[in-house]
Length: 235
Image 1: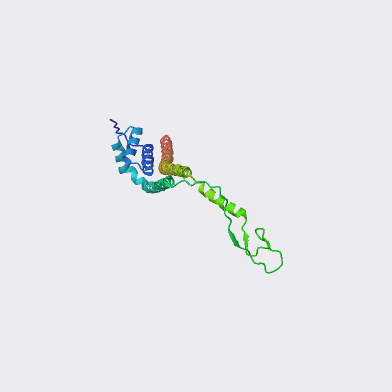
Image 2 (image 1 turned 90 degrees about the vertical axis):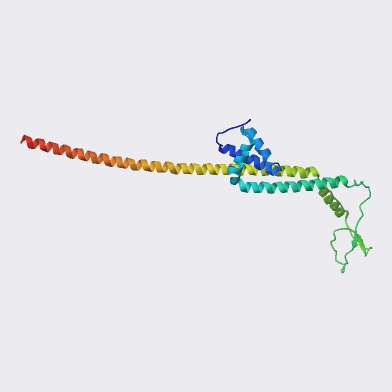
């Protein structure tokens, strides 16, 4: 049975927070997170849970809210992927056909003068009613449709995995930034305390110097008085 009675360090709290937030984002339970941290720190899961609820959780409330939001977004994306996969599996496979593309016919523009008109295709003047659209337009439309259909389920999964890795990296940076800010605050407080101690020592040194000068003056005065008394006795 794992039992430890020593105090929690800042690194222990940071590990606890990172693990719990990761389990929240991935849809796991906090109990499983406490067990993982307990195995890593040689503590009981109950001790980890008590530490989280009593001390650590209130420091990471915004991060917990963001993790819950990401869990919902991730679940929503997974549901969409599952529906897309189910739909693709249930839809009948389309057979490839070798039929040529049908060309669309549109009314030809009317020419009111004999001036040369620049058209996007070769126009037959004998046919005053219809002119064929260029084949390159149909080819471009077909290529665009093929490019849109080239996005596969694997591409979506890869995108979500990369998105999750970026989010985890952002959380680690956020936690590290908070840790450095706390350390900086502690160093500032320590520096202020040392400055106060230094100021007190300087004031004590000034008082000691003043007392020493006063003592020297008293000794000089006593020495002069003693010298004058001896001269009076001799006379």
